[in-house]
Picture 1 (cartoon, rainbow over the protein chains, first blue to last red):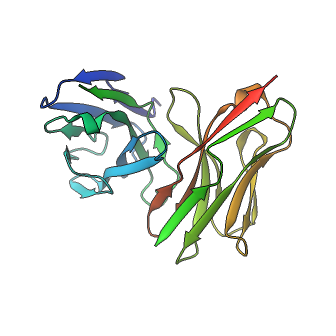
Picture 2 (tube, each protein chain N blue to C red; picture 1 turned 30 degrees about the horizontal axis):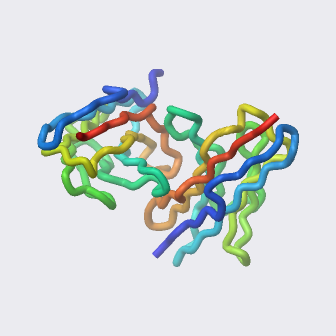
Amino acid sequence: NAGVTQTPKFQVLKTGQSMTLQCAQDMNHEYMSWYRQDPGMGLRLIHYSVGAGITDQGEVPNGYNVSRSTTEDFPLRLLSAAPSQTSVYFCASSYGGQIYEQYFGPGTRLTVT
Amino acid sequence: AQSVTQLDSHVSVSEGTPVLLRCNYSSSYSPSLFWYVQHPNKGLQLLLKYTSAATLVKGINGFEAEFKKSETSFHLTKPSAHMSDAAEYFCVVHASKLTFGTGTRLQVTL
């Protein structure tokens, strides 16, 4: 199993550009989520999904969109990048009944200039 | 409402000495508690979990944590630090949702 994979590993954007961070898992997990990690703030939940076709907002959803057309994939879209979105982004997945036991991807380091 | 507080942002120990990373929590419900570890440039990995069974929980790599309801604490310990333990550690509480602490960076020196 590859587990949770994320692409790209690094990305630099200019203010106003859009892009999609990719996330895929091969463990047939129902639950998937996106977090951002900023110094001194721990991880904050952006969006999550409890299954294909179902998504919901987390703690900091503004400026981001998600969709879940398949169980495996959960892309995160930045609509119009802002410097405040400079962060490290983690995708995670888990079985629906055990959302606390999450498997994390290696992260995407995004810089917005 | 729920919250988690990691009392130290940075802890430095010598190799072979004990490790103590402190975590306090608050929750309106009986929580589940977890510790995750993040090695440099890696994603987070579950270290151990407490889900209302035994209050002393053993995890991977010799770590353990004790749930103390009266003190609302869930401190992470290890009897003898190893260089490979150098990482960032996150305490996490789950009642109605997952809430991550701000992290404790563990430095291990020779």
